[in-house]
Structure formats: structure tokens, C-alpha cells
Image (cartoon, rainbow, N blue to C red):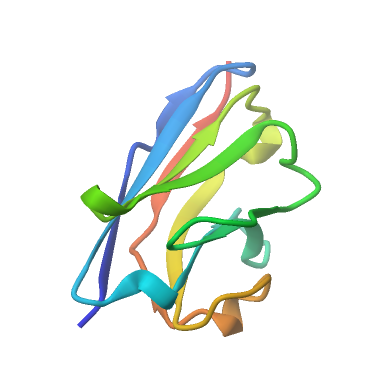
Length: 124
């Protein structure tokens, strides 16, 4: 059974940085897509970024392009989301997810496995 466990969330001031980690286990991920979504109170879950497990083309939401960076370390079975120049509107619960296909996957319905989420709060 695939398990995804996020870590690295917290409280940060505007303009600051955080790095989220997603530890994966229980699957053969070589043909998976790894993704990050976020959900703010009262809003729908929205796409943030995605990357094929084995590396390759990355995709970002327009709202985070140039500020966030997604990467994977296959040896550690971990996916990262580096978040720089954080803004108050980035405040949300961030979820790691994986899909059993490789592609440009921007809908939460396209992902098969989800972590429990980690809170990111950007506030002064």
C-alpha cells in the first residue's frame, strides 16, 4: 500500500522560505507522477506543481511559477517542494500526492494516493 508522509510545514514571514518533503513508501514509483496541491479554508484543492518520479518536465501553477520548485530524490524516495518568496496567499494545507501514470496532471481526480497534509502559514 502506497503511503505518502509530508513534513516541513510551519509559520513563516512574508518573503521567507520553506521546504516541504514527501516521503513515499509501499510502491514502485518509476512510472508515477508526484504532485503537490494545496487547500485554503473555504476553497477548493488546487494544483501547485508536479514532476515525474524519474525526473523530467515539471509543471507549476501560474501563481507559484518562479517562486516554487519541485524535485525528487529517488534514492531517498522523497519529493520536495522548495517555496521561496512566500506570500500570505500561499497559506494553506499542502498535500503530496502520486498518480500511477506520467503526464501533465493538474486535477486532484487524476491522482491515486494522498498524504495527510501539512499546514503552511505565511504571516507577519
